[in-house]
Image 1 (cartoon, rainbow, N blue to C red):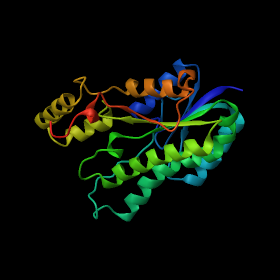
Image 2: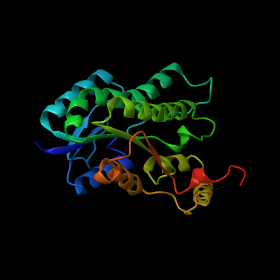
Image 3: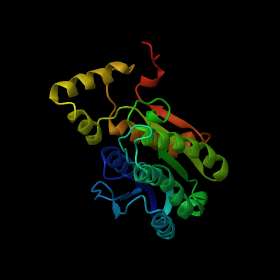
Image 4: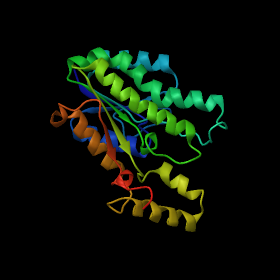
Length: 241
């Protein structure tokens, strides 16, 4: 059977980089997204909030491929303060950001267990240290990291479960956020983000793809239940500095 990796959120910048890196590593990249994902070898268009359909899709992929990893990169980021985020936005964020990876795990875990498989959840630094106005996003990313730790206990020793927590990454979503500030303010915001990191730069999608490649590879065979922070050192800085 063909060796493959399943990647959710494959249409975005990090998702495309993940597809390209997995292909470079010798796997068929199966992308799942509600939008077309041209970087994927196999493009499955599906709304990640549809948990039952994700279970069925996982079962179908498990019949057709030898699965090395499930990488949950898909996410929604509703804007809203505590007490002001709608119930619909809360439910959608929980379904897409957290429940989706559990649904895919349900359909693929037996296949993964026989192939020295891994699950990698793409979290965010907002799961640990955040700002105002993104309550549902920050909460669900924190929950996702809790899922990583618990699932590592449930699925070991046959499946390893880890996470990657990106900082500011140069993607279309980040640039769209800058655009809301206007050209001058966007450049100022970029400079602030660069200055907050120890490496004085914003990350690239390939930085995240490289971290994931390591976590599903043999060199990480004794790593599970861990969330690897890939933020250029931004969260290592004292908040008072």
